[in-house]
Image (cartoon, rainbow, N blue to C red):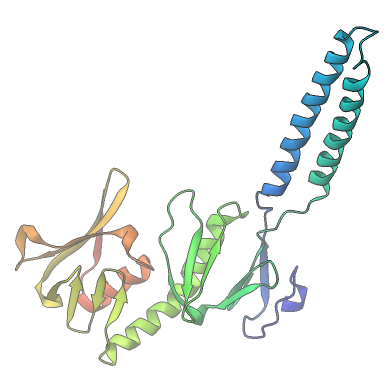
Length: 255
């Protein structure tokens, strides 16, 4: 399916064929305010009608509460109609073979997998964010339909490019950064603690009270082996894969 078949125009040829649209309607503050104003106005109009029935026939203000009620009823209808006609911003996300496009207010925000610098940890109820090599950041609202499947697709597809880029950087003599972790061909730095890959006895992830951490167990540091929370590590799955490649030790998972 070509990019021309996408639900909204994306003027990029390098994203490849369009595959799927993940859509949802975001929460509109304007619509919520309009409905709330309509409900309050309706209640106020009913109050003035009840007040009018309690006023004596010869009172000087006879009929004024009824007139006020009619005006407020009109206001309530206008607010209700405005809320119904208001079109909230959609959170549609298009998945392409070689990238993704997020519907924006004026134009779509796009990224190819090669442009993704890192994807960030995503806790339950949070938006999924990934940063680009241009310095910008894209996010996908948690209300997006198929949110989990979409995030997994981005992690898998962008993750392969991240791995290839970072591994090539290390092999060329550079250092790769994953938040508090810094990797080189022969060594690793964890929150400022540096050691050689050859010092590692074991690397394992463990979860305590719902919080996962990564521990580098070394014979040189003993009980002081460095540990870092997984939610501080961008592109965590790519990071683990790099560690296994560089340290030649499988990352173990314990409960």
